[in-house]
Amino acid sequence: MSELDFETRVKDLDWDCVGADTQYLTHNVHRYSGKFIPQIAEQVIDLLTKPGDPVLDPSCGSGTVLL
Image (cartoon, rainbow, N blue to C red):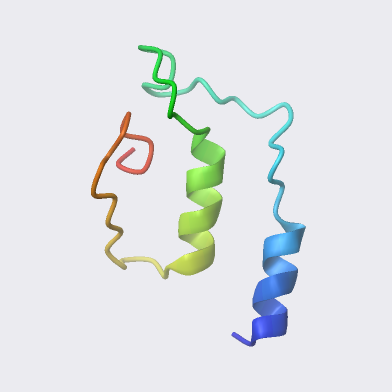
């Protein structure tokens, strides 16, 4: 993928996720001030990896990337 294609894909992503269900799975179990919405994690993982690639989240936070 060229740098221009990557830049276009990044700009075209819905970073606001307005209307998205941000409380699914375990995201409404407890409050965690550093938690980010799962749609952002999903978009970044899809953008930067291919299916089957390992994803490292060393701090794990509230588990968004793991889920």
